[in-house]
Amino acid sequence: MKNLTTLLSLCLLFTVLTTTSVFALTANHPYTIQLNTVSETGQALMVDQTQTTTDANGKLNFRFENVPDSDGASYLMVQIMDSVAGQLQMVRQTLVPAPTTGQQMQMGINEISHRQTQAALQAMQSGTGNAALKTMFPLIMISTGALSDSDTQNLGTMAEVGSNSFENHLTQANVGATQMTTFNTELMAAMRDLSAIYQLAVNTSNPQTSARYQGQATDGFMQAMLEAGVTAGIDPELLTAAFDQAHLAMENASEAQALSMAGYAMFNGGQMVGHQQLQGQAQMLNFATAMGMFNADAGQLQTFTEARTALHQAMLQARQDYQQIFSDAASLPDQATIDQAQTAFTAAMQTAMDAFTAATMATNVQIDSMLVQMAIRMSGSMMSGGMMGGTDLMNMGFGQLQMVPGGATQNWSIMMLAAGTVAETNPQMDYAPLTSELLLQLQQMQTTTNLPVEPDWSALPNDATLSLLQLQYDLMLAGMIDHQMLANTSMPLTAQDQVLLNVTHMSNQTAIQQGIQGLSDAQVEALVSAMAPLHMF
Image (cartoon, rainbow, N blue to C red; front, top):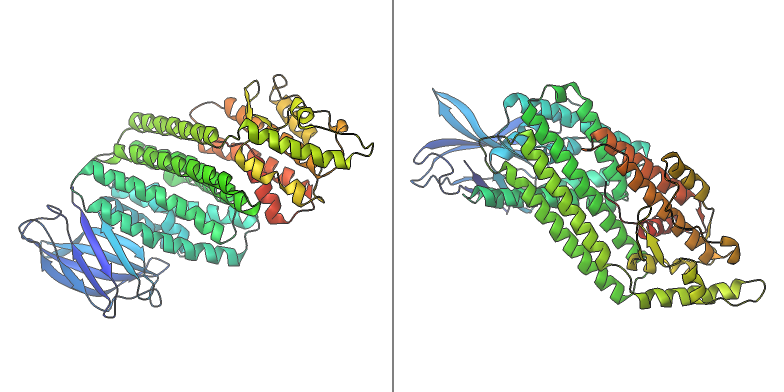
């Protein structure tokens, strides 16, 4: 396995210092190193080159001066060239967004970056569309360097199809041009950060260790992509839906049918695993936003932060374990191996989600305290001047959550407790229930038994607390619809299945949000995110 580690140290002279790991290249052999700028349409222009020879250990050192930064170039590409029969032939390459002025970066070149760069250039050279997205998708799609040139070229064209679908979905969801510009800027920054982890991946001669770093790089990049969206004001769950739409568009492209069986298995497995990562990470980001929006107390924040950290570590471990099937740089795993790894990943994700749910479940004392405060507010709103106690609300099922039809009940989460204060701080809040429509959906799925008993809403005063409780009940039903749709879908899931599940989920969430009045748009989004059950499909 040939690895090349490249360290860019941008200072006044803009120097690039490059060394290779042990046995990375042929010992005592001359190579030509070319530095290129690359435009957003994939046009490369060589700006410098140097010749150098590896030492007895296969180590290579070279230096470039006057390296272009982002003011003068969109991307930089470093290519390692070998002379064969008097002709220079490229043996490795990598592509990275040009650094900002004075920025220090690290780059790694290996078989994976070589194929990712090849695919990215193919996507960019179509001449239309979003260059940042075209370079993003190959980083997610390609998990191994053991691809043929044909598969890589097809994946590059698919990346162009996926990037267009991704952007179109966001545009149709009213994401504006300014938001997309901000998203692209943050995405380019994430790619620069990604290159530093690639440097770790290629700086080791151990293939399993390298695969772990590669998994870490992909995991971190997926998280950074969502965070780029948060900075741009784009809902992380909307980005997940756009990712699913892109997967479906790529799967339907003629180039997908032209992939080798192993190449298609790599692509599809990576997209399905990527969806689960994004879905989990998106919910964590939305929970974090809600905790800040509704001024969660110190104890709630600590509990959430610890549970979120543990979940992220478990998700990272799952991605690193998945990447191990690609640790052999010389061969592609077969469909059965990828299916087995994907099943193991899904199981690990479910275990991590269950652990997060258990860790963030409110205690009985916390639930009792919340219900007492709700009862006090409601007693003050009752026209008859009657009194209501926390026990009355508990007996009506409030403070409890049922995740699946016929499933056991559990306490609300601390995220729900934090968001529940909105009824106290915003007494003007009102909600028009969607209960009948949601129950009809469950009925159409032949799910009419073992549902949570609908409370007698007429026994409660018509105030903000009633609206909050009706909202929670509807979100619980929406979560059951998600679960039942998944249960009714044949396994393994396809890209089409994933899109349909997400469309139903997002449609119900949007309809519920539209029924909330008296809050800002940001408060509505945060409230629904916090009160909705954790889901994975």
